[in-house]
Length: 69
Ligand SMILES: [Zn+2]
Image (tube, rainbow, N blue to C red; front, side):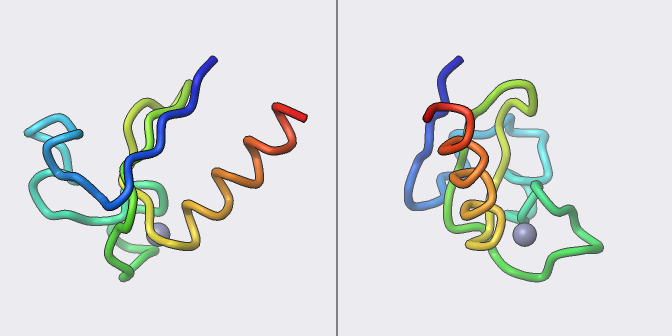
């Protein structure tokens, strides 16, 4: 398993039909729960490609540290 983090957020990293590419929203939390713009694009299983706001990126990294240490 590999986690790939793209900084800064890159709409082209995402499926052109996805919320991330079309609306440049944080897709980790979803449209209703998050008003923050994404700062990073992240690819990690099993979620696939997500657009992450700062809060989402932090939690993804914290989970990764637990998994990989
Ligand atoms: Zn968010």
